[in-house]
Picture 1 (tube, chains in turn brown, red):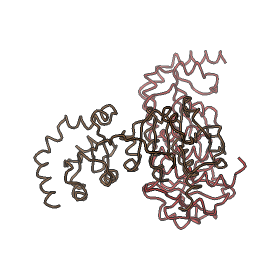
Picture 2 (picture 1 turned 90 degrees about the vertical axis):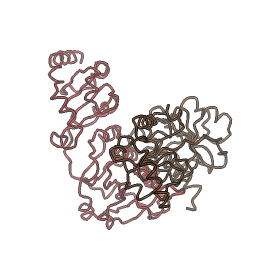
Picture 3 (picture 1 turned 45 degrees about the vertical axis):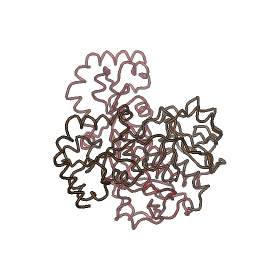
Picture 4 (picture 1 turned 180 degrees about the horizontal axis):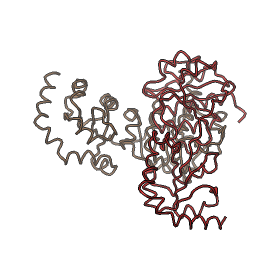
Length: 268
Length: 268
């Protein structure tokens, strides 16, 4: 491993300037935009902790751009086929999507969106028109926390490979199946129970729930779209005890998932 | 009301340039920093919806900077003693804290921090070292949703009058008592039950809870501070069903508050 490390450093010692040409920086910065992520099938993962979760996942890493301290510490984790570029802290900040770069930035392949696995026998989450990257990232973390491995997103949801989502998801992104699809079409072809979170539904703490089905969450601003309403088989609400108008979509998802999981997986 | 509207417009027609001098803009921009908010006892409230919630609250509004369309629509809501400045959309964007200004920006007085009301007979939330403005704003909304009117913040928490907190709290800030204090000192002088959210506590869904006490939430990165641990009378955890390392602090607070409120205020 020491040997491969030395080879790598010497290779990239030679290539370093070339790697950080303006064109390369421009490519990295372009990945902050969905259009270019879709064009190149690549996305950026930023910061020590998230990159280490990436390395631990099944995602294919193309390049790791890291400061010397990070490479010294974690070089042994990196697959030998991964391209490694040693960069100074200023250069790293220049390509980082974080306010303060944290040692490393990686570029990985966006996995091909597979067929949605059958959800009839388990719980999954469907998100309609969630635009806020922080909210989507939070929901991905919640899903993994509660053992829900599939999230269905309407095509109008923010892109899960947006750097802000990647950052907010804290590694859970690499272990969750996220599908973008036309939810209306999907629901019309499936017979799953659909638990829609609405403002005037049944009190979730008293409602009859189920150990399988789809938890449907709408956007904060507009709720669930009119086209999806007919597919809701169970309308549920989190009772308000005060005067607040709404809960953050992430918080609402967390409370709903907790209630489902608690009832049906009480063994934990 | 039409008359006062006309007077106001004519006054500020004359003063408009003066009101938007560089010095005034600098003052408004300074309020994005805690130091200046504390110096002037003023904070910024940004955007149509939040400003209307402000107008509906007990907070004292100093100045409203608004575009003509907003004034035309909502002028009748404004107290006649409030200073009103009509601004163009470009000028508004210049003083706005939002990426896209939304019709209006207000400056209001930060209320004097009163004595903490007795919390022995109700639930309240204590936050230790919550740095993320979005998380604090989310917790303020959760508190109001569940009818919890008091939040105790450690002095190391982000300032509740930070524009990002104001924005995330969606008006709930104006109806919640938020106190900054030395939590260690406060707990040492109080006999309240303290329910600390920790990683290895009792499953909250099975634990004995209470209709009164303090729900203590630590920072995402470091949890509850060592100094506060001895004051925890009940350690509670949200059981993890998957592999995610942690939940967002706002989501955790939401799930915990839901469980408390559901058990003790089941009448709703």
